[in-house]
Length: 170
Image 1: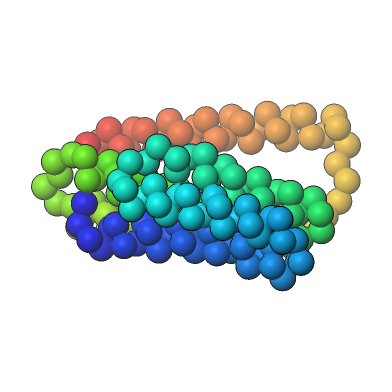
Image 2: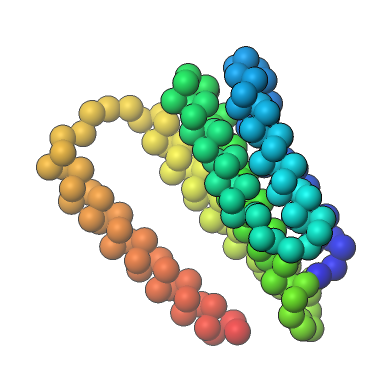
């Protein structure tokens, strides 16, 4: 893949590692800060070597650091931002590795298209997550069951539509 895509993926991984590290340091949780350095550094080293074997594990570790921090009182908006950035970094890392492995004629166009889709998905996730943080209330279990079912059906439809769009473009 071109150097722009690789640099973008590396910067996203560094940012994804930096947010849990900063959150842990601000919260005074030194063990979590060390774990954030280990997982973030491992992911960056794995990216540098170009293997991609440890990306999923390291991303999961950074998510675990954020979740443990949240359960210990870390600020919810910071955790939300950290989770979104970790997802974006993981996606860009995978995309960069797939682009490097294959023969693509228009890498710049494909990168631009992927970034647009990723930005749209990230914005929707940020808006929905922000809404969930802003609206606090207790839901009855029997109200939650049909609501969860509706969300699963809607997500299934979104996946079908995205696959159809991908098949038309590919």
